[in-house]
Length: 118
Image (cartoon, rainbow, N blue to C red; front, side):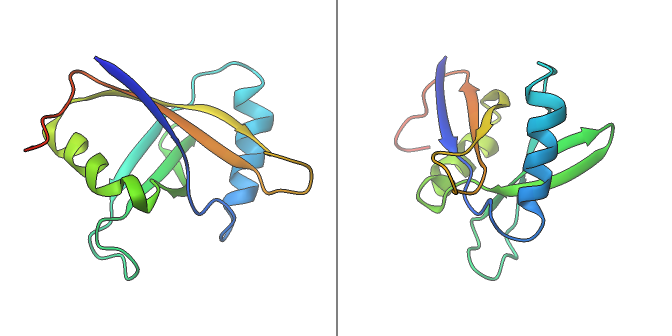
């Protein structure tokens, strides 16, 4: 089992800042578990390997907050497709410095390390 994390990319586009503000105010501070999902977007016009990250604000009410960073998405697709992703959660939401947009960090567990060939 190994654990890793990444910062969600593209958090400043569309209404994602408002969603992250809502997440920060109502869920992260309250300590409630935040459900997230990864959604492959093979038809994405900018990157055919894109993986969207979405949070569940209310039951069955999902909102995109950004993407798995492009530098990681091919390897992350392997993890998703292998079925070895055990769990993932939104670890934190915050600003890296004053005036910066809100960012989000995802923490995930994989049940075993992937072989380089996978």
